[in-house]
Amino acid sequence: MPNVAKIFSGSASIELGKSIAQNFGQSLGKYSLAKFSDGEFQPSFDESVRGCDVFIVQSTFPPTDNLFELLLMVDAAKRASARRVIAVLPYFGFARQDRKDQPRVPIGSKMVANLLTAAGISRVMTMDLHADQIQGFFEVPVDHLYASAVFTEVIKELNLPNLVMASPDMGGSKRAYAYAKHLECEVVICYKQRKKANKVDKMFLIGDVEGKDVLLVDDMIDTAGTLTKAANIMVEKGANSVRAICTHPILSGEAYNRIEASSLDELIVTDTIPLKRQSDKIRVVSVADLFAKVIYKVHNYESISSYFIF
Image 1 (cartoon, rainbow, N blue to C red):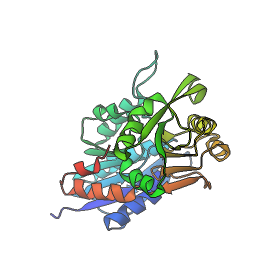
Image 2 (image 1 turned 45 degrees about the vertical axis):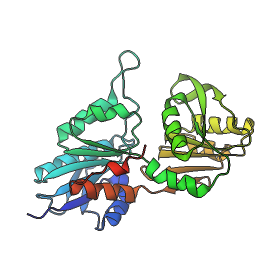
Image 3 (image 1 turned 90 degrees about the vertical axis):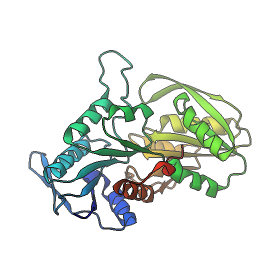
Image 4 (image 1 turned 45 degrees about the horizontal axis):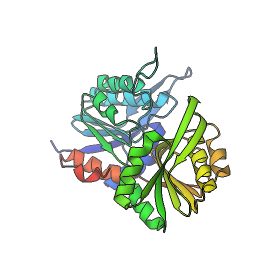
């Protein structure tokens, strides 16, 4: 039996799925989603997957229907006698719930890993997890890709004369240092205090940005409160320009308005999550080619270590 790979996409990641399939050298697999009047839905593969490596592209951002659609697709592929089912999650939702940091709360990302494993996945492919330890929540191989493979080329094209990398919070300092080491530049860090989730109470800058071209880096941008506050502080402290690169553009609530009203010159994001609307300050770079190359390597049992930059 020939070794065949087929790429399908859930409804949350159709455009990215099409781009990945195109870069892989084939059309996106035929798939349909039947919906009942009460909101229940049923996925269906409209072509044979028997004996195939099935790659299912679906980011699991809200609503949770996106996650459940992926689970049903995995189950459908297993029941249709697929050889392997690889869940391709450009954005892994619930990743912020990676630990029990207060009483009586779940570890949501572990539960999602359990659900995917129970559904029958053979492997997981994802990008820029909010916490690296989530890889250990799975009992199957996890290919954790980094958007730095795409962003480093974009940064070099910007040709910023006085580049300094910045992290909008202490948690992202490791990521900022990794970029700084690769690009041979300095690092500054923002220290923030929060009284509740998604709302920054106070923020302080650690480092000097006067006369610098600042590039903030983060794995995701949700309400944009932290990022825009950090950008404004950079300008107040004498930065020449402030840009940001963020892998996952969740952009909820007042995020778009905050970005457009902020001191940010540009926000560069990937297409792991489709934008809700366009903005003159937001530029999207695609990760489709990177995923296509890694899918090819995984399908053919070849090494993918060269795609793990930092």
